[in-house]
Length: 191
Image (tube, rainbow, N blue to C red; front, top):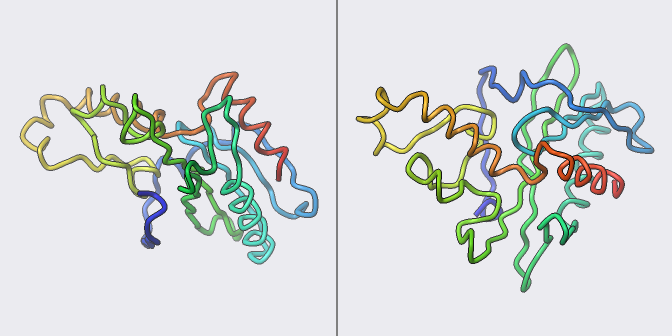
């Protein structure tokens, strides 16, 4: 489960998420020194930039708190059901051009009878490529495929690339469509 443990990784590699551009910017009252945007990426990503790491961390904490308690039934987002929490954030931190940069990936692990592994999880039609939950490296845009595909990979490389993009899209809470944009605007208004 995405809420079951803390997991930390370090290193330096430029992942596709880091290269992703801003979809649109927004401001948070009281945090005018923090540049904020929604990232144009298949997953649901906020990017915060600031020289002051304390301001950055304070805003990230506020966003996490708001997201953990956020529900929007029309968008199939529930903070919890039957006492089980569903919302969390995967944070990715880096230095860029002398500023602290923090990508916050909004995650939700709710399940339904139609999607027993998760609504925001690789869907059944993609399980031949990836049935497992995606991890940090995959969130940032590098596919980690199961060993069972090693022998087949040369023959299905293009299919794997397309499927991985679909996997990232499936795990995004707010999709890249008008409903997703409304979802972003509704959530951002709570911060």
